[in-house]
Image (cartoon, rainbow, N blue to C red; front, side, top):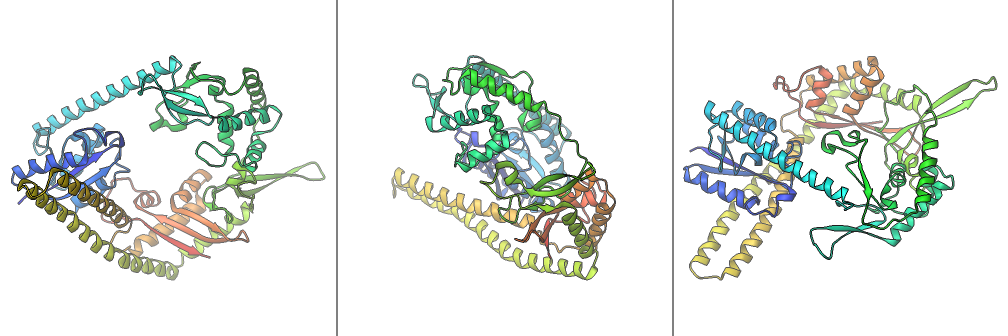
Length: 536
């Protein structure tokens, strides 16, 4: 009998939409599969996750892994956009399934990916679907821009205001001033206008115990954003950044929408103009020119608070008038939030870098030490994986058992033994229990994915270490920093600010980088993800 599996997905916005729910998808697809005389072996479900990319969809990744291991013959979905919203991603996934001789089927769209005509039909349907989604997105963006131009708030959180529903229209929101937060905003503008710099101001308000909208300490950047936000003089600013999902902070729009809003101002126009003028004068100061490099930035962790250490330097003047610059790594929380968050906990950059590089080379080129590390890792992985696999097997049995329970309750209802209310209550309880089991299943599958049962090959690891050390010794600054951030997870310091441990992380991406291989190359020597710690 043909073994079929079902993949279902909902994004957060679709959870409540009729026809999109997980149960509705699975029920429709399961009935169709059973009508074809095929056996449903398992379900793969990604809940509350966008279909824009596959990176965060753990169940889809597990499905592809199981397809490679020949655990089923067909993958069924309610609709192709459940598998992928992006046409290119859909083609890649289907191509991957075809490589493993696994067919792809859609319950609501009729095509057969094993034939040229079927693949053409799938491409056409996927293209139409993508066009429809992009059209909807464009229309939504257009509507939000129009709302902004009318001075209306498009939603979001901002210190000093709260977004409330309009009394006239529940679908519309407006901003109202929150006095206890507006006081903080006024204080920030006043202190800056009186001559305080960003770092001094941030340190001051954190010492006073002021908190951000989310209840955190203020960072320098958060204070700067407040000072630059025209919302506090009664303006609406919209579309400041474009294509956020792709460009993030780099997608700056030089011509955002800025219009008079419908909300009350928190500060006066005079104060706003004074602050903007002062900030403009200060920002025109030339940047300090320094060519020093900090390859361990973000990898070193503060011994007091655990924050990442960042670049710092001290310029000292000699008697003859010359200068010398000393490089340090300093606590990032202290640098960004002031003494209310932490202390500097500085360590000399030259000293810590030399120590880290020497220890890595000394430890990872010693074959005896490396063999002990690999043996310990394999032993730990083996002891960890077996109980997880047994637990996963039991959970899958439990989930299948709930289907039988549902059938029994339906039979009792059909026989008049229980009321409709009792049936609804029982089914609701079962759905809650299934949801708990599925979440636990996803958690275990993720642990198994990170701890592949295949033993780590000593020769592969030895080869990686040799290349790693060669790159660290010979690479330029930019290349060295990339590799270090790729391989080192973190470096911890003790209370004496001495290196305590170096935690390294290796996966397929690391292997490709260190050995100069391309993504998607030969999988004969694929290296599963693993961490190991050099305790010093």
